[in-house]
Amino acid sequence: MKNIVIAIDGTSASGKSTNSKLVAKALGYVYVDTGAMYRTLAWFCMQNRIDPHDAKAVAAACRKWKTKLECVEKDGLKSVHLLVNGYFPEKEIRTAEASLAVSLIAVIPKVREWMKKAQRDCIQFGDLVMEGRDIGTNVFPETDYKFYLDAHLEERTKRRAADGVNENLAARDQRDSQRAAAPLMIALGAKVLNNSNMTSAQTSGWLLKEIRAMLPATK
Ligand code: DC
Image 1 (tube, protein in one colour):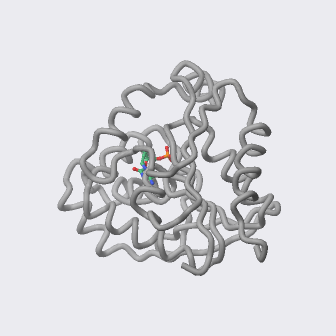
Image 2 (cartoon, helix red, strand yellow):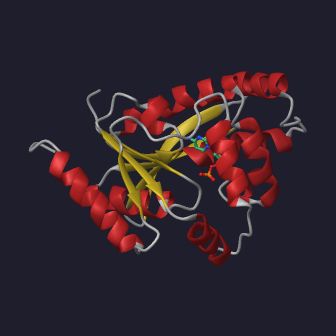
Image 3 (cartoon, rainbow, N blue to C red):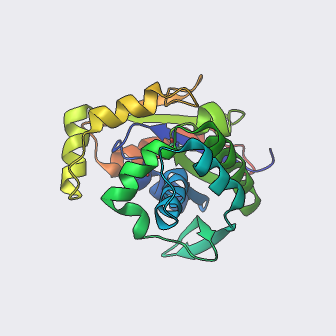
């Protein structure tokens, strides 16, 4: 693996997105939101009336859909988009329906296989900061840069509510960590941070300090 991959896994609302973006921007690396890729498939199923409970139909959709990975730069942040028929459904993947459907399709082993390949393909764009649930354990297990973010349930619920989303995070945690295929867990060797009482400036500052201490002098 020539390029560097910083794997940032963790529970929902643990600050993965905000901090992964801050770290990617500071280092000039490419940000990859793997949750958005799962959400895009959930949206595609909804568009095509494919029942997200029907594992065979969802796996078949995965074999057939026309996708492309694209690296875009906006406001100083480079990020990867998964396009379907040339379109990135940025807003559509954040609806409550898409959130509900995504946790159903994310348990399907064929879906996880497809996603893993697409996520590994992102390395073509350069050094990466990739956030998700299974990046350090399953997608890039060979990387030395593994982080796991968490915060107390009450704090995470508060953060989601501040974003205008009321979600049962305890149920989501359970679904994410108890599924058979690539469940959410702390990767061996991952540096763990509980950021319940920290601001994002403090969390991203901690991540950057840890990462810079590990980076080779040439990077
Ligand atoms: O991070 P998010 O809420 O956008 O993730 C959406 C869903 O996708 C969530 O139910 C967990 C799942 N997911 C996953 O299983 N593996 C990943 N690497 C990223 C997300």
